Amino acid sequence: GENVEQHPSTLSVQEGDSAVIKCTYSDSASNYFPWYKQELGKRPQLIIDIRSNVGEKKDQRIAVTLNKTAKHFSLHITETQPEDSAVYFCAAGYSTLTFGKGTMLLVSP
Amino acid sequence: NAGVTQTPKFQVLKTGQSMTLQCAQDMNHEYMSWYRQDPGMGLRLIHYSVGAGITDQGEVPNGYNVSRSTTEDFPLRLLSAAPSQTSVYFCASSSTGTVNYGYTFGSGTRLTVV
Image (cartoon, rainbow over all chains, first blue to last red; front, side, top):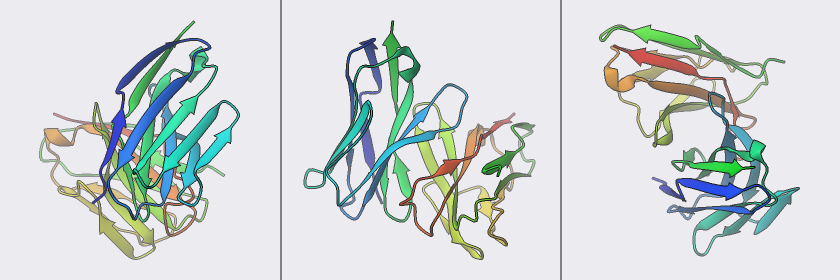
């Protein structure tokens, strides 16, 4: 089955800095790569996704890049704000989704 | 339009008891799934369904049963609760028979087995 590795497990940045979270996956059949944000005690919320026919996608301050050859994809957050503090999960799959173990992002004012 | 509704929000069970976690969606989604979330482990797939009458096992199915008699409902049954099943359980649905259009998650059920 699919195996998704996510790094780093924790990330601390200053407000205004950029943050990058990286994931690798094992199953070359995976064709869908979403990212979820989960605030403390809340449900995961989809923030951006990318499909295997696209290399990069951007939505305001967040962007995702995908390298299918190397089987890795990354989340980039620019101009971070304190409200970006949360746990971020990557996932990969085609018929089901396998999630990474999460990255706790802390943005300090 | 309530989205994905999970009940109960909290539950405490004694070892050996059984119970059903309810999940209902009103978006006519074909795909539904159950995940458990444990500290440091991310979200792990328990069971999933691509449509009414069809279910399949995920990564951690042991100790759990599911059924999908209607498009709207996807209950998760714990047959004989064990402390290892203490976790937060999330139900999720997707608009097609595959996952490729993003999950909508329910608000979760926090289960403690003592």
